[in-house]
Amino acid sequence: MSRLDVRCEVDLPVNILIDNNGGKGITEKRSRFTSLSLSGGFINFPAPPAENKIIGLKYDLPRHGEFEILGQIVRTEEQGIATRFYNLNRDAKIKLWDYIRDNIRDDLSCPYCGKKNNQKLRKCDRCGWSLNFYSQDYIIEHEKESFHKRLLQKSKDFSIEDIYKILNYIDVEIIKIGKNLDINEEFVGSSESILNVFSMIRKVAPTDIPVLITGESGTGKELTATAIHERSPRRNKPFVPINCAAIPENLLEAELFGYTKGSFTGAHTDKIGKFEYADGGTIFLDEIGELPVNLQSKLLRFLEDNILEKIGANGGKKVDVRLIAATNTDLKSAIAKGLFRKDLFYRLDAFNIALPPVRERGEDRVILARYFLNKFSREMNLSRSFTSEAIETIRNYDWPGNVREIINKVRRAVVMSKGPDITPAELDINIPPMEMEGVKSLKEVRCTIEKQKLIEAMKHCNSNISKVARVLGISRPSVYSLRRKYNI
Ligand SMILES: Nc1ncnc2c1ncn2[C@@H]1O[C@H](COP(=O)(O)OP(=O)(O)OP(=O)(O)O)[C@@H](O)[C@H]1O
Ligand SMILES: [Mg+2]
View: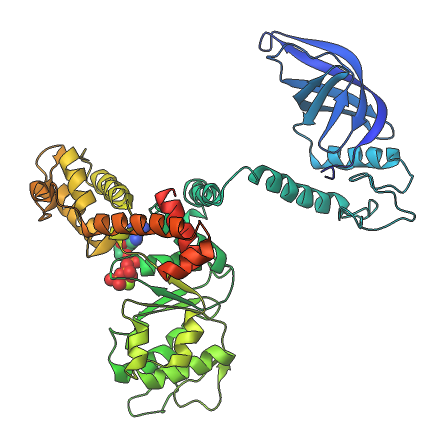
């Protein structure tokens, strides 16, 4: 494995500053760096007491003068201590690199992996590191690459689920701290299915690929569309939502594409359509299944060349618009009935984000309910919490209206509540918890059968995943995900 830094042997005096008793006195001792890299150095010095992990380092670089920086002791050895530099500013870094470069052994071997080359190379052909040390961008390139490699090394200990959790944590918890990046502040959830949605949003947002968002009513289709827009390079340009079902068919074309003055009776002035208005930004066509077939053809043409055809205009106009569409109907059955164009469907379906209904998001329903309870209590300056029976009811209810239903029920409960506790009755959910006792939900029954069949198939097929997939009539990835789900 290659090093992540160019390290050179040196013999450079350094003064070590050790803080005694939390700043009451500093001891200064002389020693020597025996090796140096951009990220740290090895010092021929006995380790100070364990509490002094951070030490001051004062050194004179020939031609560049004196520097004082902080170092963290990362390893103690018989010959001394390995330190990582703490607060190297740009200037100190450039000068240090100047010094290191002068001290690299000039024997043509790669200082990262040690490969002996017989001529000067720009890039090591074994480890791939840039050896172009005199290039102006060397430090920037080096830092970028070594950061990636360090991250890769660290992430080896993480499972893919851990990485999803970290990404989601960064999205939801850390990015929202940044003032301009708080787009996910209100996108709540930590179930595997919703983490998958977050991951798809992250992947597709920086591109211009059209996106089709599907999901039952109230699952967050519009929220997803805004999250994509706000994470995209288009975030400072308009996000233009339009509900295809809400506008009469005869007005929809004008609304979307605009018209020129005099193009039909009543067109007294030019009208800018939503596509033109969204230029540089994103258009969100909600309920795309309701788009009349003639407009579907026009939309498809637009997706091919980005040329906007205004009603009554001679020729088109190029606009730069990203399309996000959403539907809660089954477009495939609309295709079968001749109501939706197949070619448009495949164009949109290239990137499909399918939002799971709340009943398939496990504990998220409780997380969502608590989130909205806090939100509304804060807004109404009240202190409210759910009783344990209320939590149980939230868990057992299927939420056919999805997140919107959670919002409505929780808001109503906060408004109607007389005391600090919100009970199932105040939530107005009609499943008496007693009746549920002993009765297994459909989901539980399905899980039990799924698990049992998987165990049987694994036994029968000697754990050969391809065979198991064939026997059960599912894909191999589905077998893997079922094994993970049931810990088999
Ligand atoms: N994961 C979530 N976290 C927090 N709020 C959410 C979440 N998902 C949806 N919401 C909220 O629920 C409400 C409904 O969401 P949205 O309008 O995006 O759903 P929709 O799928 O477009 O619904 P419809 O099909 O009825 O148009 C909105 O107020 C939205 O902000
Ligand atoms: Mg919607």
